[in-house]
Image (cartoon, rainbow, N blue to C red; front, side, top):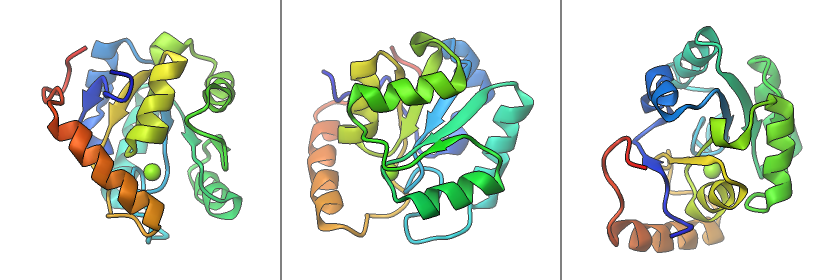
Length: 167
Ligand SMILES: [Mg+2]
């Protein structure tokens, strides 16, 4: 099913360099809100910061691929010296093409890590990337986000693959 993630984990910290190597992934596109940082926060958690550092040390390329507004996305990206795209238009394939061009990795060696089935996972699957779903850091502030979360839970409880690596 096209909204089923290849891998489902709790948080970005579970997307270790070892797991990525096992998946053959050398580049990571990461969603911002409720994936890397809580949508109501302005600072990354130490855990998320440590994760970014661990990928950098492992030589894995990272870019932020967000549908969020420019100011927030670029301020955070600048702090960590990451390429970033805001209001990028996930789940449409052009959004992922922009991310892939920034990373320079082929799609099959690139993962999209995000918290939403209908933007991050659906888009990654349509674009031929490895899709990695994390549990959202907050319930979301927008009504349409909350509605999407309800639908996501319904789909996921319909029998998601629950092992960390199951493709
Ligand atoms: Mg998100």
